[in-house]
Length: 106
Image 1 (cartoon, rainbow, N blue to C red):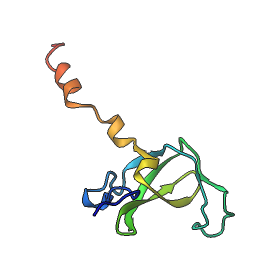
Image 2: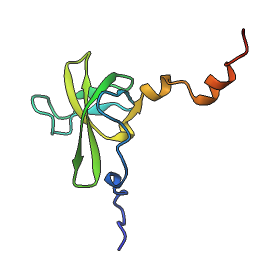
Image 3: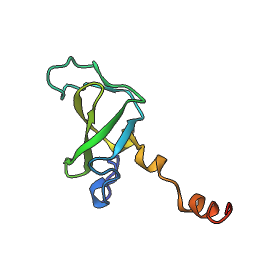
């Protein structure tokens, strides 16, 4: 039996982000009616905003939902992995870069 139009079951793999990880929004996120106290369609997060993963949950036993705290806005918004990119990974030097600089200037 195939999933048809359904997406892959994401929770079969480890989460892409961990609590405490710094992330950036890759899309504008609007309230779909699940965020209390805000109008439907109101912007919750703008593309490029930076925040920290606070917690990880699941939705429909299929997807990870990352509770991201947006410090500048003072809000926590549930986000999918496709809506985020890690800033911690981008700043970590890769092993090839660190090995090429060793021993050149002594």
